Image (cartoon, rainbow, N blue to C red; front, side, top):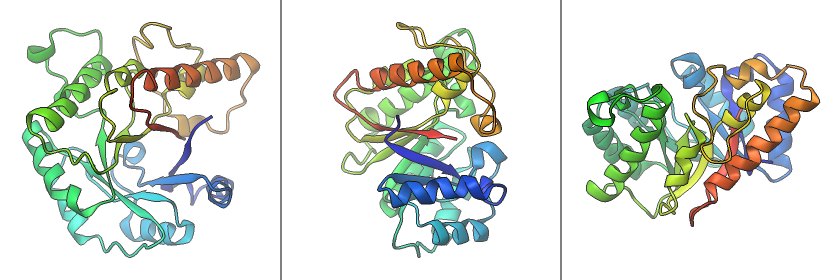
Length: 257
């Protein structure tokens, strides 16, 4: 039901069957993005081991090791990266502890990568002075990234609209109804429709979700799935696609499993 597959590198060493899923996907012509697992681990996977897995798998894309909300380290990692992976294209993640740092990081990494990724959960998005009192942090994340993309594209005009961009993660699915004019958004990864469905939550036809389950999908990949859960997941993925396709931009969808 997705357009491509999204792999977490730290699971390769734990589960050969998991790794084989992505070998099979590539052999069948599907795109695979290999992630450095920073969202799951709190810090990027070991750089040398990560390079080994890139060389072994030859994914369609790989995400250069970044550092959460640290533009300086993220830029330094990019400058040290050797780009010696001719069969795979590079993705650089924009990081920063403020808007100004994110702008700086974007300007530093964009010329050197094949695709630029922008996260959904910068802590500085939580700003009651700007957005007022919202129900939970995921509403701040939703409005925060929406505002950030508008800032980068229209007000700062730093977005390279000729280069594909990737949106990392999702707080609330209704966020993606806002991006119909952003043809430069090429892909999205999220486990939101699946985790929500497994936990018994169906997307609301109008609002999507009012809160986000905190559980990560990779912790649930060996769970037994009953008919009701499967129905919920399929429904949510369909609804997520409808939200993303509501405008002119139609980014590809992958599940970060």
